Image 1: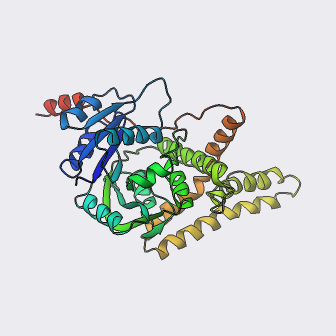
Image 2 (image 1 turned 90 degrees about the vertical axis):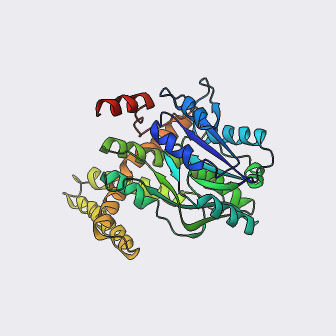
Length: 344
């Protein structure tokens, strides 16, 4: 695939990075791996597999957007004739056949800037949190408003809008897609397997931080593009503030004046949960998964509100947002080798 290059990003992904890079071997013209301060030998691993590497400057705050931009710049410097670039996170493995299918779609449709497919969780039943990730990524096929971190993009379109916004700590892909659509480009999600993802979410704390990060992204996205015709994430942001702040404050704050009658407002939460549950059932999701997803959506309003407040607090103080990380580092390659020896 001489027309396609690949940019993978990661930090301390361990063996997951090996799976990622090996899955791209011989499928693209060139692979660039961008590392954000790994201490587990990721850079050495990537080089041993044949990837070109970029080590981000530690003095500049890390973001996935910045990493992808620098990887893209390196890719084009090495292979200026590349027409399409596949972005992939270092904890994901490409599915066989995806690169060819995505390239064919972009070649056949010159007005499409981005194509993405179905990202699946590698171990969806390992934990409830992994299962939630797998459900979340099952979005409708066809023309879409946004893509995720794994997607193939047309180089000309990416360059036209200036790439990702490197200051964003989350939500950089939908924000890029807003600018692409404003310039007349389309985004499509294909009915095809694209990547396998390894979330490794095992605790409520990880889930809370991930939801907090999502709330931050909604707040920043609506702040940047909420006044455009697209009204980017305004509805989502309004919903977070209503369910996470306005309703509970009204219910609890006026309970004394209303002799407890205002507490009936809290019945809105089970009603909302049921509505989401019914909607997921209509999408043919099993009842157990529909219930899990509905409950997580409602409870998630509270960490999302925390992320919203965090964004606006730092914005008003003129401070740069810091990464909200929820993933635990994968074992280093050396740890894996030691573990393997000990089990023999």
